[in-house]
Structures are given as structure tokens and as C-alpha cells.
Length: 310
Length: 247
Image 1 (cartoon, chains in turn purple, brown):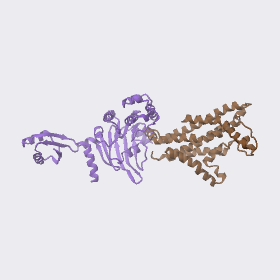
Image 2 (tube, helix red, strand yellow):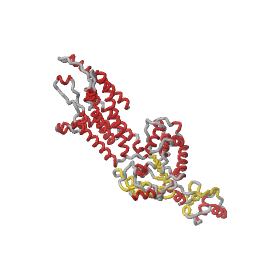
Image 3 (cartoon, helix red, strand yellow):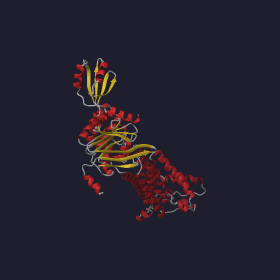
Image 4 (spheres, helix red, strand yellow):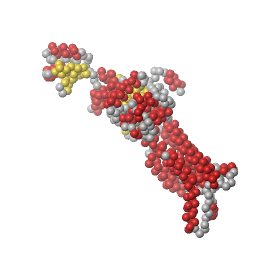
């Protein structure tokens, strides 16, 4: 008890600490000794193929599911329902009372969180549902339901936002809006946990990423580090075979690959494109296209997952 | 839905007399002895009479309870509410409160109807007469409450509306009668549905008296205590069942 009290004032306690979480459904191992630490202000993307344990993890963190083994701590304290009031969550599908209006549903959320109703209208406006606020939930389209769920997650000014596939069913405009909303929230210092299989979105919004596969953590670290882990050089010219020969001579070349009409060079150290251009011109090769390409999360993700199976 | 139940209750209370008299009228034509029409609604008998007839409607109360609780599961709102910060125990308590309120409203309707009908049909009014058999009001409340909590238990265990209705019906009409027939009478009275039903016995009437059959005219303490114990027992079961469950 005293330890908990001390941790309350310990501002350096991580927002979330997961230790050796395991859960099986019958003989299916959904989570296998999963551990993770999330610090305040991080935007953690949890990536993984379907069935990798993303939703199971979030379910356990929110006391919907019970783990077989392991434990977790929010804000350095053992799990308790009052802690969940500091967290806004959207899991799988938006769940509301179909026979109640949007406003009424949000009022119920506000009651549970222990906050007043005065900000409900603002949140409705933020997600673009203000005009339909008196309509019953069952009349909403999928996109509207999703947006209401996001509004509900924001009620009570949570310190942590947990979003499971928040852009599910949304059109590109809405996806961009949600993305900006997440970035805005993260900018205010909130911690965000985003589970998704839209690698592109995770790359754009998250500061950290954890990759799950079959219940195990395959990688956990900063997005930046993944992106910087392997830069590539794209080259195009009229005489590709000549270019290929010339590139083989350079010492920074780790790997060469021809993709359609573009030569992709994997670099093993930092390179200045202008320098490369100068060298090639000296050899009589004139490039029509030269570009430094950062590694994408997608390529790393696919590589990681296939590497495991391969 | 609750208003439908309330309307039904009221209809039954006020219509019961017509119904019973109608049955008697039909019977009279074939019976060797003419039977006197009698009034159900005079004090102090009105309480037991109304409570007895209302007892048939407790199934509707159970359906309302089943419906509202299984709805939370199928809409997954129970999930969302717990994620938002409600504890599992708080959720159960909120549903328990719902059942209690429903039972209170039923008892209140009974009380109000009884008062009105009693005033209309009783010749001599004294306060003592009005309150004489009024114990049937809390007895009715207990009957409906215990049955409601049983329905709540089934709803939490089964979680799907149609299956829950089936489970309740199965228990009420089949399982308990079977167990009841296997046990000696002394023990059978302690079974939940038996105890609930025994709280308010069939009211005596001139009709019955003619046949020399006499039913209990008051509420037995044994049944009342049994019901109270079941209320507590079912509630505890729900709390225990829910502690480690995946939602």
C-alpha cells in the first residue's frame, strides 16, 4: 500500500508496464510472455497480423479479459477501475446503446468517468457529429459510429488513449482527420496506444512501435530507428547495365537490386547523393533520377515476419 | 416496455373480478348448486387476492430483467462501460438496483390498486381493516424481487436473450418440478421457485369453502426467510461468477 502511495508521486513511473503477460484460449496461445514498457507522451503503435494478440493485450489492459499469467501496472499502480477513468478506449467495434441518442450515450460515458456534461458538445463538434447528436445510435452509419466512439474516448480528458483500429470503416478524408487528431493529442503530451495493421498510418503518427506475431513481441523501439536502419539509394539512367557495373565498384554498396527500371542500392553507410552523382558523371554516366529513400516500416515489418517464417 | 408491464398489471388487477365472476357464471350453469358471486376487492381480502393474481405476471418482470441484462452483452455495452471505468461489481450492483426498483414499482402499483379497489368495494372502512392483511404487499415485493434476482442470475450466466428465456422456462417448468417431486415435501418447500410461489397462497374464497378446502391466509415466515436467503445466495453467485470471467 505504502509502495503504491509513493509511486503516485513518482512522476518518473512509466505510464504502462506490462510484465510477462500470457493468455491462451484453449490450446491457442494468444499471448506468450509479452512484456512492454510505455513512457508518458509516447505514441506507441502495436503492429501485427490478425491473431497476433493485439486486441487480447488491450483487452487485458482494460480488464475485459483476464490473463493467465503475468501482470501489468498503469501509472505505477495495480489495476483498478478508477484508473481506467484516466484512460479513453476504443476496442474493436464502437459499442453504444442503440435506442439512445448520441448525446445520451456520451452522457452515460461522462457519468461513468465522473465528469460533467459541459464538454460533450465540443467533442461532438470535433468529430463532426454535432448535427446528428439527437439521432438514435442505431441510425448511424459505420463511419459515424466510429467517430462517436472516438468522441467517447476523449471524454474526461484522459491521460492515455487506447485505440484499436480507429480508422476502420472510415473514408480517406476521415482517416486523415483522425490521424491529425491523434497527432494533435500526442502534441499535448498524452500517451497514445494505437493498434493497427495500417503500417502507413502507424509510420505517420507513432513515435514507437511494437511488432507482435503469434503472441510474442518481435520488435519494440522507436519508429525513427526502424526508418533509419536502412536507407536506400534509387538510381535511374538510360544505360542500366553500365550503371549496375559502375555501382558495384563503390564501397558503400551493401546490396543491389533492380526494380523495374530503377536500380535500388542498399547502403551500409551514410552517403551524399551529390557525391555519387559527381562520381558517375566522371565515368560518363548521366543519371535521370537519383533519390535517397528511407526504409519504410512496411518493408521492415514484412521482412521481420517473413524472416521468422523463412 | 416497463410501461407495458405496468399497464398489464393494472388491467389484471381491475379485471380479475370480472374474469373470476365470469368463470363462475359459466360454472353455475352446469353445477348443481348455484354459487354466489363474490367480490374480491373488499378489505382486508383485497391484498391477498390482488397479490395472488399479480403473481402470475412475475414472468413479465423476469422477461424485462432478462432483456435489459442480455442486451448489455449483445450490444457489448457492458464491455465499453467497464473499459470506461466502471468496475465489474459496480455493474452488477447497478443491475441489482434495477431489479429492486422494478419490484418496488410493482409493489407500489399493487398498493395503489388495492387501496382504490378496497375503497370502492368495502362497506365499512376502518384503518385496522385496511391494514389487516397488508402483509401481502411486502410479501409480493419479496416474491417479485426473488424471482427477478433469479432471472438476473440466469441472464448473467447465459448472456444471450433467447437462451436465457429458455433457461428460465426450463428451470421453472421442468427442472425444479422434477427435483421437487423427488424430494420429500418437507425439503421441497425450500427450493427457490417453490418458496417464491408459496409466499402468497391461493386466497380462500366462498367457493373454496364450499368444497371444504382451506388455504393459508397469511404469509409464512419460513417461506419469507427462504426467499430472502435465496436473494442473497443468487446475488453472491453472480458476483463470484463474474470475477474472473472474460467479457
